[in-house]
Length: 132
Length: 136
Image 1: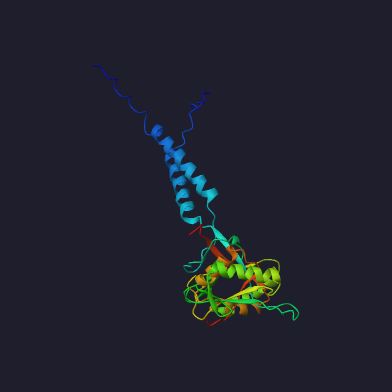
Image 2: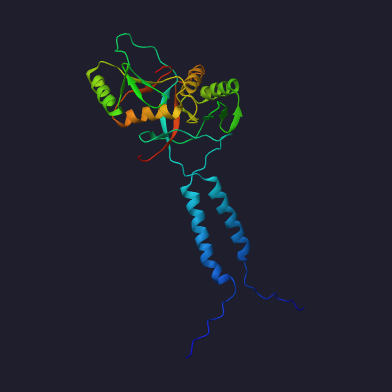
């Protein structure tokens, strides 16, 4: 009996399908992945029951142009931050509440909050309602 | 003068190999360096900060558009549905943090009002997502 032994052939893997698949994967990952640098600010959903013995919070109002008002006066962020830090350290105020005025957009309010954070003011919170 | 004739290329496969190498490197770069998050139902332009802590838009993300539309983990929802789903989620995962991705043009008071209504679902604190803006 004669059996034909098939000639051993080198396996040929075509490069073209591989390149196709790799390109599709590349395009998918390029479109689907994001490189945004996300950050986060913790916000309380409401005010808890205030301790009657603790000093009141300092209220900083933000107007639509991003100006900061404290105790009825418009102050530069650095001056305000310095004053707030001093009052927090002295225990005159328990915390600082940033209240955006009516119609102030979120970007302006968050910018004010961020400026004060950057100037070293601690115990910051975002509050509601403030007419300027 | 005698110039050697350039050698005939050995088919297409040989000059395509460097390209495959580069494409593979790009693929691996995008797979590892990029992050994939669930898309929102609408475009959101979050506020910029310079001093906020790290945060990622993962787990439950409530997106708020500039016109007040709401989306929860990519689904467009109305407010009663949102509050119901957040209440259910918070009951199941009391330790997880709710993240809010709000558009910077949204009036700040609208967001604060939404936060107050979210308080009704038992969520004591949320994390507002912002984008890092290095030095101005």
